[in-house]
Length: 271
Length: 318
Image (cartoon, rainbow over all chains, first blue to last red; front, side, top):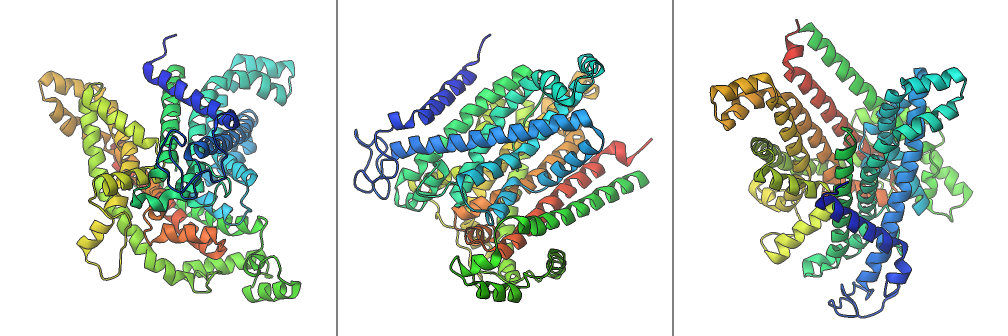
C-alpha cells in the first residue's frame, strides 16, 4: 500500500499532536496556570514561544491546551458515533414509524446551524466540560445518524442479514454482529471528519466564551485570552490559532486520503 | 407548470412547518432544561418570597403553553419582550443591529459569489493542471480554518505586517456608504475566505459533471475553444446545482457573521447574541436565535425553490 506524501505528512503531524496531548505533563516544561516569568517575554531558549499577558509559558499552555482541545473533541465524537450509529442502525433495521420518527427529529435538529443551537442551549445549562462534551456530541450525532442509516440501509437487504433473520437472531445480534462489522470502514473515515469538526467547534465555542472555562483553557480559549493584544504586536494569540489550523489541515489530509480509498461516501462541513 | 407550482407550495409549506417546530424547540425545549430565569436574575442568595414575586411579575407561573402562545404572538407582532439584564425592550435593540449584520453579510456575498464562480470555472477549465491544483490547495486550507482563526490571521497580516487597515470595525450612524464599506473591509475579507472555498469547489464539481455529457463532446469535436464550451454549453446546464450551493453558502454566512462580528467587535446582531449568551439573558438569546434560525431556514427554502425553478426537466414536464 503506497501512502501519498500529503497523507503521510498528515498522519505524522496528527500522531505527534495526539502524543503531545497524552504525555502533556511529561513534555511541558512549565505548569499551565502559574506565571513563570515576566509578562510578554519574547521567545527565548527558556520560553520557546515567549510568555503571555501574565507571564505564563505559552509553549506549556499550548501543550496542555491541546490536551483539553483534543480530549473534548475526541469525547464528543465518541458520543456522536455511539448515539448516531446506534439510532441510525436501529432506524434502518426497524424501519416503519421508528425510522420515520428518528429521521424527522434529525431533520429538525439539522434545520438550524449547530452553533446557534449550542449557543441557545449553553445560555441555560451550567458551563462545565461534561455539559459541553454532551451538547457537542448530541448535536454532531445527527450527521453520523444519516450516514449510518444510509450505510445500514444497503446492508439490511443483503442475503446474510436475511439468513440471520430466518435463523431467528434478535435485533441486537443483527445490529452488532451483522451490520456493524460491515459498516465499519465508511464510519471510520467519517470519524476523522467529525473529529476535526469537533475541534473547530469547541475552539469556536471557547473563543466565544461559552466553551472551556478559565482557569482551564483550550486553544480557542487561549486565542480569546490574548486576542486584544494582537493589535499591539503581541503575537501570543496566533500561536494557538496556528495549532488549530495545523491540526485541522493534517486530519483533513488523512481523511481525504481514506475517503478517496474507501468509497464515494462524502463527508462535509457543516453549518 | 402546475407540477412546479405544487412542488413549490409543498416546499414552502414544509419550511413554514419547520419554522414553527423550531420556535417550539427554542421556547419550550429550552424552558425544559434545568435553570430558572427568576433565580438567574436574583442570584443564589434570593429569598423564596422574592423569587415567587418575580416569577409572578414575569408571568413565569403561567402554564408553559400559555407563555409559548404569548411569546409567539409577540414575536409575530415585533414585540420581543424585555431583556433580563437591563430591562429594555429587545425589539428596538435588535432593529438597530440587524441593519449592520445585513450590510456585512451582503457585502461579503457580493464579492464571494462572483469570485467563486470565476475561480470555479477556471479550476474546471484547467482540471488536474496547475491552476486547478493551486486553487484546490488554497481552498482546502481555508475550509479547514475556523472563522476566528482566519480572522486573526487576516488582522495580523493586514494591520501589523502591512498596516493598511483598522483592526476594529466601527460603524456609526450617519457614516457615508463608502466609509462604512471601508470600515467592514477586514470582516468582509474573512467571510469571503470562509465561504469561497465551498462555493468554488461545488461550481467546479458541477461543471466537470456536465463536461462528461455527450453534447460537450460534440462541441469539442466541432472545434470550439475550451472556454467557449464551458461558458456557452457547460455553465448554463450546471446553473441549477450552482445556484443551490451559492444560496446554501449564503445560509452558512449566518453562522459566519456571528463569530466574525465578535472578532472585529462589530456592533451587530451576532455580537449582541454572544454578549447575552454569556450574561445568560434567555429572552434575548431566544429572540436572536429565532431570527438567525429564520434566516437560515428561509435561505434553505430559497435554495430549493431556485433549484426547482432552474431545473428544465421540472419546468417542461413530458
